[in-house]
Image (cartoon, rainbow, N blue to C red; front, side, top):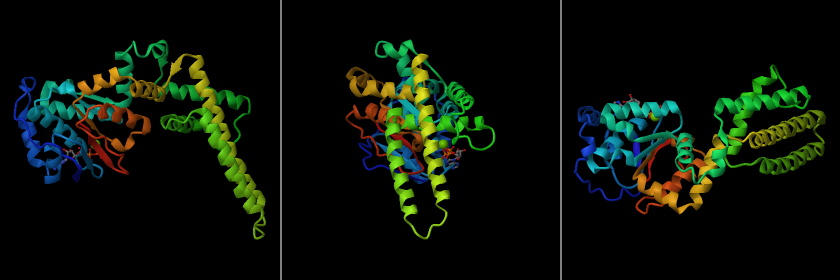
Length: 328
Ligand SMILES: Nc1ncnc2c1ncn2[C@@H]1O[C@H](COP(=O)(O)OP(=O)(O)OP(=O)(O)O)[C@@H](O)[C@H]1O
Ligand SMILES: [Mg+2]
């Protein structure tokens, strides 16, 4: 395991003890410290400036985030409520919380440990005056999103409007896959309108590919290429229709999904100095576990929260198994 960080900032560590950490179980923390290898230790002991940990599965990345949090509270005198840790799943949140309880006792409940989605949900809840429109609507979770996609697909199947997307077996078997595709598109900020444009471009590309095959004298059976083209574009067209239908239903029923939620928060954060100042003041340290799973809008939210504070620098996204970023 190794820790990367171009700018470790001031290494001068204040040994002041925070009154809020009197109950910290330093015994477990000290025992865990002894188990660290030199690079893990360096990441835990670097309190200021950005730190990035890139390491393989099961090598102690989450452990380092927990220990670094304990160290920040213990050595830098930072209040636990001024630390934000994000991760990808609710299971990840529980795992981090458990480790913190082991090391810092009741202070563990004061550290803000969230998935980025629940962080965004809290932002909407805690700033009702900034999200007046969103407050009128209801957030739907993953299961409700699945139900909505299933409703749309059932309706399309009844109207024989799904020929390509559900070609084998039980057509509703594909609901989960389609839901995930829609989630990915929205997660990368692609609207149904933008997807239509991309589809047009893809159709042109696919037609050019087919034309090339038609002009190839060595190809005898052009039908199989025509079929490939038709299926490829057919699937994308059906996905575009379901995607459009899905967003329309959300609007009509005054609902929004997790991706909309991230986008609402991002949109506000980008333009609202007051909110930016609030987060800059509230979170002196931010650590991200499972960083490789954050998508662009989620990453931008973190970057905005980080970048309003002058003594930290947001990191570029690591390419593969990078996890654990601190940007303050
Ligand atoms: N230096 C070490 N010596 C002994 N055990 C360690 C050391 N570092 C980590 N561990 C242990 O390895 C196990 C895996 O650690 P952890 O869950 O933090 O890894 P991870 O890199 O976050 O895993 P994943 O890739 O699954 O997220 C934990 O039980 C942790 O206590
Ligand atoms: Mg982990």
